[in-house]
Length: 220
Image (cartoon, rainbow, N blue to C red):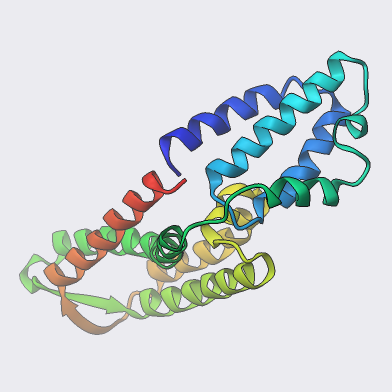
């Protein structure tokens, strides 16, 4: 998420805390629809900012949230989203790349840590680094779960998994059990399956991390 998107999201959080419960409930329903729209995260936050201002203005007049946006939330969201330019082909490719690299970055970071521990304990075996049963099975289960989540998200919302993941807390919570399974398997099922070239694998893992971080910092 880019710097300007994070800044606008923080501002929106500060503003929506001042809304009445009725306006907050309305904003929540609108946000749920916006978060799954195939537009950039910055555009999502811009829409939320405009909606917050509309709700604040309605409150200052003593009007209800329904008076501000109309009675049909779905129709309101559709009309607003219809005016937002879609993602460009380049942006869609970058989001797709991030959808692939981001899930891989978490196991990569864990494996780099494991490589460093193994190097400190068994330096005489370097540059050969063992791939344990737990690491192999854990990565398999974790990546399978994330791939299913990515495909399901794109099928149902036609949006990037990264955008939906960043926007909806429930999606982030769904991945926690799979991440814990991976960590536990990697920690306690440590029987070596085969050996790989340590420097090469660590370089590839660092590349995945760096590119993923760059995309996270630059994509809106």
